[in-house]
View 1 (cartoon, rainbow, N blue to C red):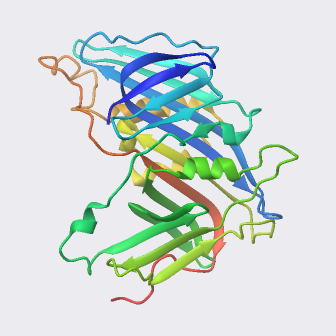
View 2 (cartoon, rainbow, N blue to C red):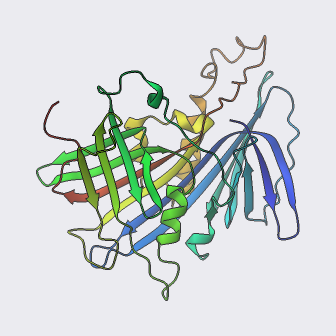
Length: 320
């Protein structure tokens, strides 16, 4: 999906580019074992635009911290606020012009104000819902506060003698989103403490509507936990979807270290496209545009949690 990227002020908004192909958001958090308090510890964002011709990209105003990402017709938009532009990288090939902009969030601003999905109207229907025989498929759904039975594309869990130790869930980005839900639930100030909402993951075979197994964590209030939990919620679209499931968990700790996160985003984008650019082939693929046509699919959200020590297992133990 291709987006428009605007930079907003209270009075106006300026179109930076109409060829935004990749978006990345990362918010890290910690959950206090003593009282289940949810603290968002940092965040970063990235925007990548590419064009087969010299792009008509407006230079950003580095003093303004509000952005709006507008999707295709019927998808709406989402807004990113209090994000200070940190750096940008421009690359000009003979057949591709690209620009990567990287921003970090202002930790002095209320977390709920960092992101809004209020104008995002995209919907999602799983392609498997149209399969003729659903009995052999395993379905996962996520619930948290106003998120009810959200489809999960993938679930990965690390288990040990203490039970579930870490959990990674990938879902489509629809409203209400995981990003907005966690930012709104988090502590906003010393006078406004927030708590990690109850997280529920249900597993079922087919679409009979009856979960075969449900896994839950977090009390939803100030009740203590067996141990401290940390993690992140991430939004990815376009080239940033080339992050592999195997390496997704390693983004933990990156939001607060821009000098490590930005080069890693550059490497991630290098895996996206018709071919990988290197010094050997950089002059061998210049007969036509190297731009990958944007796919008409939704961004995804990734929720990662570690330190769980939950004695319940994620998947059913009984084979069917």
